[in-house]
Image (cartoon, rainbow, N blue to C red):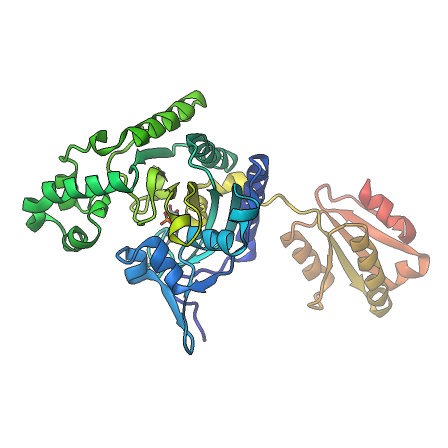
Amino acid sequence: MFKRITGTKDILPQEVGLWQDIEEKSRKIFSCYNYQEIRPPLIEDALLFNRSLGESTEIVQKQMFLVKNQKELYALRPEGTASVVRAYLENSLDKTTGFVKFYYLGAMFRLERPQKGRFRQFHHIGCEVIGSADPGVDVEVISLADALLESFCIKDYKIKLNTLGCPDDKLALTQALRKALKDKLPRLCDECKERFKTNVLRILDCKEEACLAITRNLNIHEDYLCAGCKTHFLKVKDGLDALGINYEITPHLVRGLDYYTRTVFEISHPDLGAQDALGAGGRYDGLVHELGGPAVGAIGFAFGVERLLLIMDSSAHELIGKDIVYVITLGDEARKESLKLLADLRKNAIIADTDYENKSLKGAMRKANDLKAKYVLIMGDDELKKGTITVKNMASGEQKEVRLEGIIGELKC
Ligand code: AMP
């Protein structure tokens, strides 16, 4: 028997209701903020991610699902930002629309070691605002993330906020870190020893005890920020304060990808355990230009749907019983007649189903119970001759015979 690929998941019908709930709520909130949906392809030129995320990042180094074609190297998208920026430029939106607010829902792929809350195929709900460096956009985007969590009835999350500054500031921080960590190198974990050479900022958010002990003692102030970036961050904080959004300044928050500049944030939840990030995002003011477009500001974030589901109170989202009408037939004539009845019910937007497993009356009633049917319609050859049908209200147990032609009206009221 075939098995699903490690780190992937079958979302079975009993769970799909929750997914649809999250998707519907997200669409509603994004629309209220005037964001439009974009659906880029799931597969892209692999170089797009190398160029956007950075050659030395963990995703590019180790986690890309690569698809080798005869000549080209494709990658299943590990995240949405690079694809959205590529689509923005390829469709000349920089020239026609300029400022855009997009959202997306969909599968992402990373070749990671699977564990709780970490899959190889997972799903993002994300957004990207391209065409402005205004700190007001940062405030909108973070408040939008907050509104989404509220609509999912998720509480007790923490918004961690930091600024990386512009590329010059990032460079200053990188150099300061190199200097501060140089003589502590032997005590860092193996991965951080590597990061010291390739991506020293990442050492700041390493979760290894040995590294934490060192990095938590480093005094990282906002000294490395230029005046413009300091003011920008101040405005972001002021805006969030004005909206009453709680956040915690986290100087060690750096995010893993090269494209991040200025505002970065991560939303964590204590119930998630080791993989405690529900979602994350930040500014990437240099990426549009890096990919061949104008030098415009941009910001985005993404939530991981699997992680949202891990902490959503599933009892609060129990599937609302669908008002199913279940048709049971006794005899060949009734069976034939039921086809028309089912078609009529469905045409009238009544959810209707019937027994295709040739069950006995008792078995079919049990099935109706399992389906939590609201009504069962019993159609026998004898009743058919009289032009009637038996209607059973499954909640009250009440049963009555009604004229066949009046059945739709009976069920609708
Ligand atoms: P990232 O692009 O890594 O910042 O991811 C944004 C969010 O996606 C994270 O906060 C997680 O909620 C989710 N996420 C990232 N990687 C995975 C994964 N391998 N499995 C499940 N969810 C993930």
